Image (cartoon, rainbow, N blue to C red):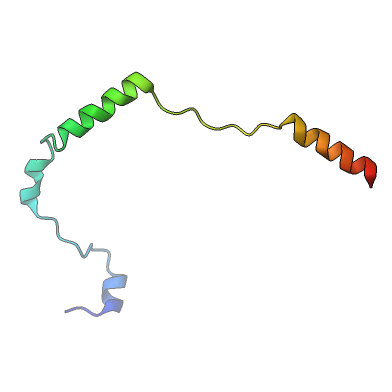
Length: 69
């Protein structure tokens, strides 16, 4: 068994990947959920990003406080 220092210095990954899992790479896993999500995206689309806007009330409030100072 290697020491932690040796593991930290090595460039070889510690995890071993089981090659028998390659058969799942092309299999459609959770295909029903993927189809449902794609349908929802097609019909409703993505949400629009929020934009920062200045409200008129904020601008008015600042000018009033500046005049009272």
